[in-house]
Image 1 (cartoon, rainbow, N blue to C red):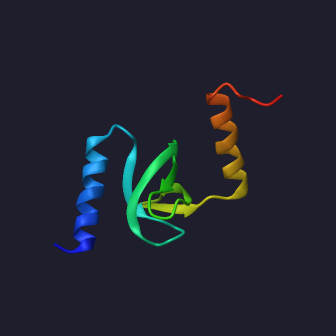
Image 2: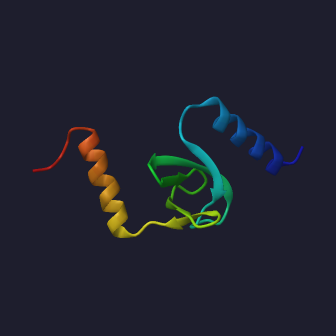
Image 3: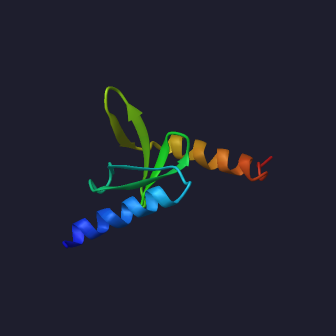
Length: 87
């Protein structure tokens, strides 16, 4: 069994054994076909390189690199969710 096949089987096991929102997709940063884990709705983190991606649906699903504004939005949402809103 090749390393790529082993990696793919491990990714499938992770995806189907957890209730975490995960998808298979191509990372916009490293270009690998890998597992992307949901940070918040429509925003995913690459399990290969750790970069954040935005899900874009237009006939097919693609993942795009986040803008700085989108990164700030996610951080603010996380602070609100954790009750740590800065005043």
